[in-house]
Image (cartoon, rainbow, N blue to C red; front, side, top):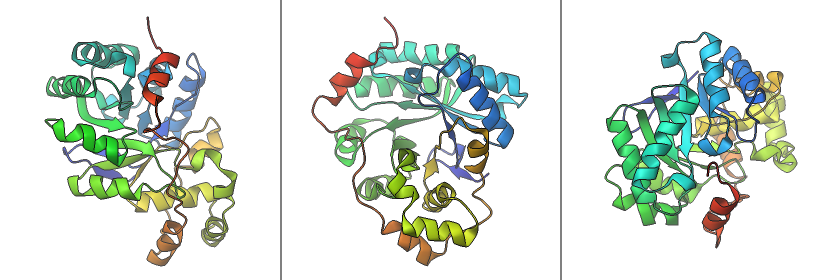
Length: 283
């Protein structure tokens, strides 16, 4: 497994296992166990996924030492603001059954972002979090918040795949050493992407499937990827991307697929209010 050094010196596995929309109470537990058995050492969850407890239990039951597994979770909008965010950090730790998290993100860029960020900074100083970052920040949103932060985030987790390569965002992140993490790295099963003639031709050449070619392209682009599956074979296959390498010409072919638009627009009017009103994780 390749590891990437973040701008704070923390090393993160380049491929993580995402558990978005996998139910708690057994299914997430089994999927995470399968991922750990397949060789994953990076698990990405969130308070709003409501499955932190399954993730923690799977890590404990795996027999793998805690310091060998990189755990990410995220603070939900309901817990923004300094005091609420301090409680939110502790709640995530309690749910996970852990005394620290490797990476903790602000899940959405709305509301009292600055107060929440200050709480994450303090939690990092206290040893509760090793690295801190943000999620779903477009260039415009990034520039409206981050210049007022005391510290630069280590990560911005956003939608990213060959059809939406976040080129404008990377012009801001790369000079600051901020790593882009990709959710929906396979385009959320976009049949057009998986059947794209460039992707299919490369898959045939290297004896891989379309998803593996896409993930390889993203890894070679310096992106941290978070593929999700509950199928044990697919979980294993998504990690089998380190025995081949795309040439620079092939990378250019993949870069040419960029359409510059994703499925989610964080700048759309009312998105923050909609998320807060429809996803309440506690009373």
